Structures are given as C-alpha cells and as structure tokens.
Image 1 (tube, chains in turn orange, blue):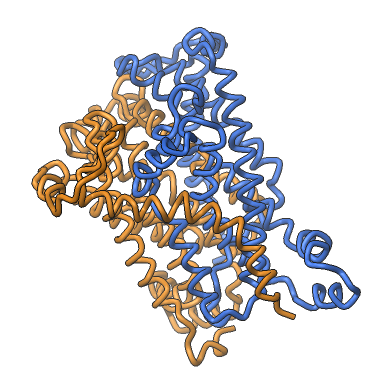
Image 2 (image 1 turned 180 degrees about the horizontal axis):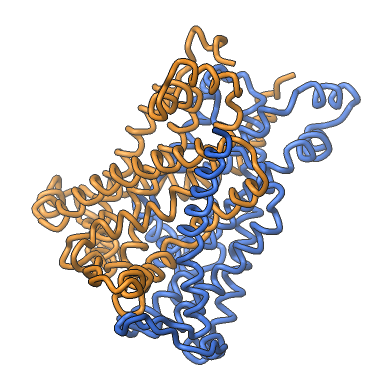
Length: 292
Length: 275
C-alpha cells in the first residue's frame, strides 16, 4: 500500500526545508550574483554588470592553473582509487579469518580528516623526521628528494589516493563477495587473466556500484582543498593550487566575492552535468529482469 | 596451488595493513615525543616516550577542550537531525509510485557529491542576513543541508530491501504512519540508520571548509583549530600537532569501533536499474 500524497509531503517537508534554502538557494544565488557588482557588507543594491566579473576571473592565470590542476587531479586520483581499490577487493574476495577486521582497518584512513591528513603527510614526507626518507637512510641508500618541492603534484595525488583507495575496497568488497564462485571457476576455465576477470566478471556485476562510488569520489576530488592547503599550501607558487583553494584564497584574503563565487557555480554545473550522465547511464533497461 | 594463493593473499593483507597503519603509527609515536632523526645513519629514535605534548596542548590552545566539546556536541546534533529527516524522506521516496522517484533519489546522490566550496560563499552571506552566521544553529542547518542528500540515498537503499508486507499488515491492524515508522520500519532498518549516522558523524567531525567560512569567533571546531597549530609557525612543533591529530581521531574511531558490527556489514546499495 503506497503512501498517500499528503503523507509523502509530510515526510519530505523537513528534508526540503533544509536542503532548498541552505543548499539549492546558495548555488543559484551565486550564479545570479556573479552578473552583478554584489559584494558582502555593501549597503548599496547590486547593479547588473554583465560579464565583467567573468572577464576578470578568466583573465587570471592562477585561476586557469587551478582549473587544470583540479581536472588532472580528479581524473588521476579517481582512476587510481577505483583501480587499486577494486583490485585489492578482488584479491580479498574469498573469506578468511580476520577479513572483517581488515575491512575495518581499511576504513581508518577515511576517518582522518582531509585537514589532518594534510598536516600528517606534510611531516611524514619531510626529509629529516619523515617516514619516506627513513628507509633509504636505514639501508644506507642516497636520500629521496624532498617530494613537496620536487614533485608536489604527485605528492598531493599520492596522499589523496592513500586516504581513499581503502574506502573503495571497503565499499566494493561486499559486492565482489556476492559474485558466485561458479563465475570465477568459469573464468578460470576460459583462461581469463586477472585483467580479463576484472573486465568480464567484476565490472558487469559492479558497474552500478562503481559508477555510484565514482560519482561521489569525483565530487570529493573536485572539492579538494584542505588536504592540499596543509600539505603544500597550494605551492610551490601555484603548482598545486586547486579551484577550492583558489576560491578560498580569493574570498578570505582579497575579499573578492565574485572570484570566489564564479568557480563555485561552475563546479555546481560540472557536478550536475556529471550527475545527469550518471542518471542516464543507470537508467532502467527493457532487459532489466535479466540481471539477477 | 592453494598454498601458493595463500602466500600471495597474506602478502597483500600485510601490505595493506602496513600502508594504512604505518603512517598512523609514525604519528602516534611523534605524539609521544618519539621522533626519528634521518640525518644520521642509521636513523636515530629519540627516546624515552613522554606525555609532554598532550600536556602542552592546553597551554598552546587555551580553549582546546571547550572547542573539543563544542565539536562533539555540534556533530552529534547534526548527525541526529540529518539522520532523522533523511530517514523520513527516504521512506517517503521508497514507498511512493511517483514516476520521477528514480530521478529524485539519484538527484540526492548528485547533490550529495557537490563540493562545499561550490555554494558556501553565497550561503555565508545568506546566513549573515538571517543572523545565523557563526552560530550553532547556522552550522547545524548548513551541515544538515550538506549531508542530508547522501543520507537519503544510503537509507533509501536499506529501506528498499525491507519487504512491504510487514508495513501492510501493520496498517491493516489499524496502525498509523507514525507507528508503522517507529515500530516496523525503524527496527527493520536500524543497522542502516546506525551506519548512516556513523558516516554523517565522521563527515561532520572532519568538515573543515564549511566551518572555516561559516564560523569565526563564537564557534570553533577542531579541524579549524588545527590551522592555528599550523599557521603560527610553518615548521611547527610536530609533536604537539601529532598529539592534537591523535586526539581529534579518537571520537570518530570510538564511534566507528562501537558500531563495528554494523560497519563490518555495511553495504552501500546503489539504486538498482529496475528498483
């Protein structure tokens, strides 16, 4: 017996009452205000100024760098997290003693806040007191060059993958476990390699789960800011600046509202487009009943 | 062949544990003042461990424990409120025949993946107009709005798995909507509710960007406080920061450990193609 319309409305009202004013409205307002000379703490009513703000923002080279960094960062981290996360889940697919404890341990890096992760790795990567340089010193090998100066972008990516690939394993494990053993046996009889098994057995089964996790990871990666802030401060220069850091720096340091709001609503549009793609790719199919 | 497989699997398990735990172990050691010196060969450890950094936190950050308590209270209220409203909304969506239902549920997932910075600056101004900037209520509402969509999506997956027959027979016995929700649906999905609450608590406890923009003087949360330890001196006292880091990790670890039975069985159920 489905709910009546009135009941549905009553149940949905608290959710709508929070999400519409505090999530959807700001996203739309940011868009609307970017075409005016609006700025906070200004008594005068905002005046329409067309694309003037956009000319300034897109004329800023560090904005373009931040966009490129965020795009590359998102692509690389999300692919690495999904590939490593699923590969590890695949290797752990058969039950063994202590596996649920291991799954629990895998959740730990995600429990550390991005800010704390940035602080922690800033120290762990340091040459004198760090974890990275400990091993070559112990083995009397030449020291590793300081990554936060010599390969800051790679360091940012590695830290983020460390924080999130175990989460992917955590989430993908029940799905991979539910694949019947017969399928693995058949795959082995067919002589499929590991890559082949992942492609032909795991992917079709976990397509939906991976798309869903992927969307969340992409959203998270597009917003990356505080871990980079504490790890490299966006530097050296603007080498590791991201859109989130750019907006923050503009809003806080320069009180330049439109510089902060324009990257914001552009990101909203990007996420909505990706979301539309997600909804399209997961649409019901005529042969939906064929899936078990 | 099986023996060979075992060997490979254990190597991977050990590797995973080391990759995950070694950085944390390094931080725990640093918080007790046990630091490694890589400038000499072989590396030298400072010994013995002390509790000095934990004792110094109060001195560096006078209101540390007040801020700690504020963050716990804030995260707890946000978690309860978000889980509550998301539970109701998820139930409404799961039990409706509305043709746009799939779009709405998946729309929640899309909203749930919006980065904070993408809407936070207009929100900050809105809260200022509403006189909710830098208040407990303002923070609660803003984080509820941020996390509720994801909570709806996760809970919808759990509620969908509960057969409707129980609810139908409860309705036939004369139960109202509230009774069905609290007596039938709630007990059936409580592992999902606990798991969702744990996830929201973690996300809220770790949120940095939102409180940085929406609070300032009256409300200060732990991740924002961490900035003080960092910004004061660029190469700040790592022992002290490690102590703060370990303390800040404790509440979430305890919550997750307390709910470990639920979290071990946590299944993220995506909306199925025919569901």
